[in-house]
Image (cartoon, rainbow, N blue to C red; front, side, top):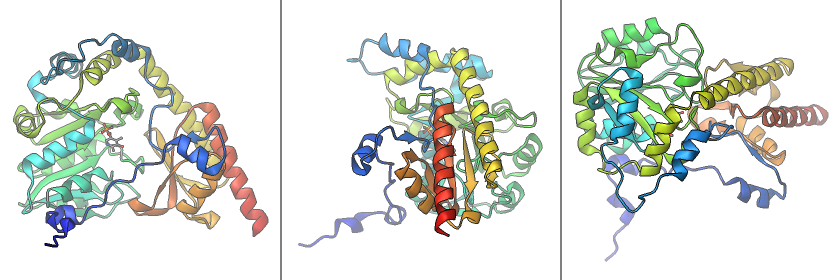
Length: 374
Ligand SMILES: *Cc1c(COP(=O)(O)O)cnc(C)c1O
């Protein structure tokens, strides 16, 4: 019998490709024969995790027991922090899992999911995995065009994903535009506002959508411990919503989806104000350092409120991939984003001061080399 196992894929899965993670730094160092490579490619916290989270990790014992599947302690802490009830909170294996849970819980092949052009890749992945149709709405000034997204909604639309701010572009939506969206969207469509970079944003007009979950029953807000809290390796994030939405996600969630180390580190990290403040101010200074350098080099960039920034290489005659490879040989890993429909941009994660400096020097040196060759 000859059976092509690949043909077993469901329609949605047949069109998916496995995620290509970046190579480990050590492997690249061996391949390129250089050392001290720095990685500014995954929007991780350059300070690492905080002391309180590390202490919580080293004092977590009973690893032979299953974790608290209901995440009681962390939910209590989050409920207090955000002024919501614990039954409105869903804890995920990274906030990516929350995005997947809501999609699996309420969408099927007959449904549509509304996503912006250049939006975070996970939205279309989870949509396609359940066989739903992703409706991709053209971006406006690199960001989400919320009124066009709202206009795309119909009775088959089940989810709209709004990244605020968006990764990779760093663009954001203000209070008024998000409220207008929520007020005009059909109630049977869940609006997921992904606030993975919330803690970094310092704009008066930037909304904290968690404050609105009791007003809009179809609103789901997601946050993560992976970015400003520095716990990406532990995989933990959460969603806050109406309790019925939390109930639906709880039905498809694995009983022990988040491990005990992640749960205790996250609770501790929530209380580590110093680490959070240091992370945020380091990011602000680093953002300034990079934008100043880009200005000096006459390079355009997309203004970003996250811990990363997209620089436009159009004027250099280099594509993002070409520049990425040249920077790699200078010992700096950044992120080409051609797969986001941005072939002329590179996304750089804000690093430590000396890492940013190394990146700036590497970029200058590549650009100088280009001038000489021209
Ligand atoms: C990094 C990121 C996340 C968070 O992913 P985790 O699964 O929590 O690590 C979610 N949304 C966006 C837009 C991101 O960039």
